[in-house]
Amino acid sequence: MRSVVTLCMLKRLSESLPNSTTRVVMKDSGVARFGVFSASTNTATKSDLMETVEPDKGHAHSLVGRDFLSLNHFKSEDIKQFLWTAKDLKTRIKDNGEIFQPLVGKSAALVFQKRSTRTRLSAEMGMTKLGGSACFLGPDDIHLGVNESVKDSARVLTSMADVIVARVHGQEVLDELANEARIPVISGLSDFLHPLQILADFMTLQEHFGYLRGLKIAWIGDGNNVLHSLLYGCAKIGIDLNVATPAGYEPDATVTNDALKLAGKTGASFRIGNDPRQAAYRADVIVTDTWVSLGQEQEKQKRLKDFAGFQINRKMLKEAGGSWVFLHCLPRKKEEVTDDIFYGEESLVWQEAENRMWTLMVSFSCDVRQNDIQDNRSSCNQDQRRTIT
Figure 1 (tube, rainbow, N blue to C red):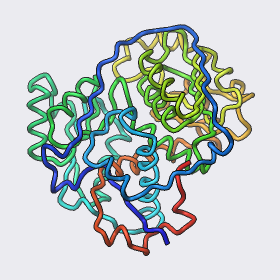
Figure 2: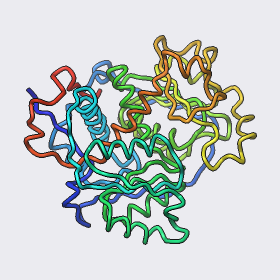
Figure 3: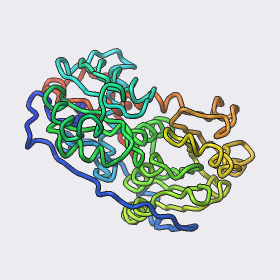
Figure 4: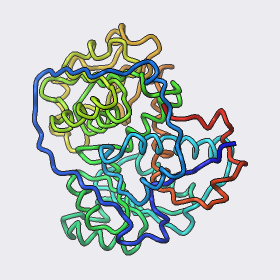
């Protein structure tokens, strides 16, 4: 039997030292708008689509001790490693009832400028399942850059916690936290990126379809932080992506251009425009998100008017793929998707929400003992221990 490897993102937390953490900071990219853009670099063959990557113990070291701020900072193999490990944890702990607690005595500081149900729940529950603890710091508890500088807050957090999960407004806050903290920083969300959400989405699709490459995803909605991370994720893995946003709500041009360059290497086909029905054509996966995010409440009426015609409904999806599924990162409003789809058999939103926890748990996990790695009593049998494709 192949040995089961529960991988990690963080270096053994008890041995975390200043020089053990890899710092990767995204440079600020300006926002630019553009017209309809279409590009296809799909050169993948059938054999390419069936290509599998077996996670290996040695490759896990590339994930050790690193900040998790953007999927663009990780290789395709890294992302596949995250997904495989998340599935392994879910199978071992949830399905087979295995007690796996490598983080006993370790703690996570949860720094939230923006409220959330799923991010907080997934962090607190996930850390608890792994034997550690989490301390929640909401906007009334910690004032990043207001009563105390981000630099000073990062140093205080470093002295008491083993890892930071930050859900903030600006991406620059995450970047500064990562620069100043001597412990790993995980993005719970910024206004610019939401990488953990895409890991959960990909895990959900892998569970449902059994593969990722070869899928066609249609994003219909706002050109926001979730879409930015989806662009990076699809480009890295080699997933086709059609995007439809209202005019003036297109994704960031720098992110789009970066993703297109990456897609040229993986064979992904991208089409970006303003027609939701065209985006949904033959799509396997339909994805949308809230039209009015936190902090945009004053724009609500304008946004509702601008997004007219973008509600996900069966008429729009008449020419979608034959067995399409629906994703939404939540919370959802009725103007975004009809009830019959949101609560229907095509909806994977609850599985998607749960997988936020398992993917975050991968980021929390520390190195396992050698006997854990070689333990043949693991919950995953040969069939369950499938690769990410």
